[in-house]
Image (cartoon, rainbow, N blue to C red; front, side, top):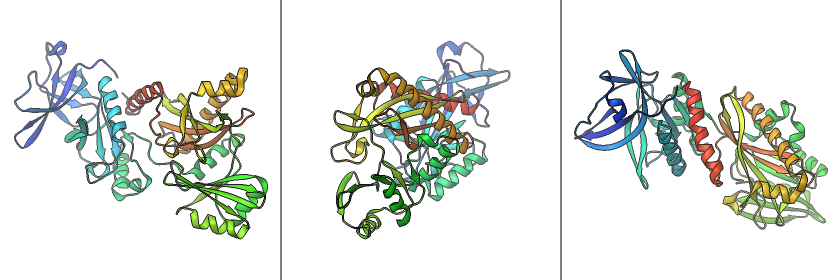
Length: 423
């Protein structure tokens, strides 16, 4: 169900309360509309008015008004689920701004709802952006679909966030993506779908015996927090002539140490690890760009029920860093340029294998989540022989800096919300 916007939802302040109405646009005003419009598929009814009542206009958004005999319907309405916070909500506000604006261009009303504002009623209080760093809380219809962007694992574990997801499920509102990934679970899903050749050698638990078994097999290994992000708490261990060298990434800084004995190494690991479960993973030699290791960030979204590669970029490691994350000193490079420089005439073949591998992995992960996922990004390494290696999947991708990928990703979010809502 889709048409060009022919109306606007309008919010006006009248004395001490906010009035929410629907106003047909000029081309639709000649049509005879009923007194009220029901929000698509819901119970909320909004007055239809040809001329706005008196009051200060707070916000307006293009939407579609549909004739349904004696009843009119209006929509669509989507919500971005954010964390609760002292300033109304917690989340990536610039990203929320872009999603809302993309929705406006496509005739969809999108608002931000804090986890503690989700309830069983027909009207939720949500946030819209009026200008630079100006957000206002207004009454909003219950959404047709929800985009989960609670920004941290800690916020996702709060009672308000758990309850919000339970309420959304109870109401039958489609939502993606429901939670952050756990590395150990993701590796198991990929492996169990016959994709072991795509995975570096990985141990799902960190203990002394398993660590030294891995160091017997591999010259270098990574210790990765199973529930970590942007590399915080990651450890790289490299075999040396007299023991091992250890690099630890915390709060964006990499510190290096030397350990001469196995006891010293294990004590170092115990001291430097962050709380929580770790996995041990073989370190893969990566192709280099201008003398520095690099890996690939691939964004995938589900469109018409099928996973698609939206785009891919390259992140180049900073000097002396153990990850390629830009917040940790990494930089950006063009994927086609890197592949061409590394593999010459074989670049297209390497890229085709990369694309096929990430699509296979996306389907495997989505199957493990009962098809509830709508987007993810993946960190993929390519070795000097052109083999692709799966490092990590991210349930809530960070913003891609490449403009074309960014544009497609925003449009894909709105499209997927429409699909989830059955519109």
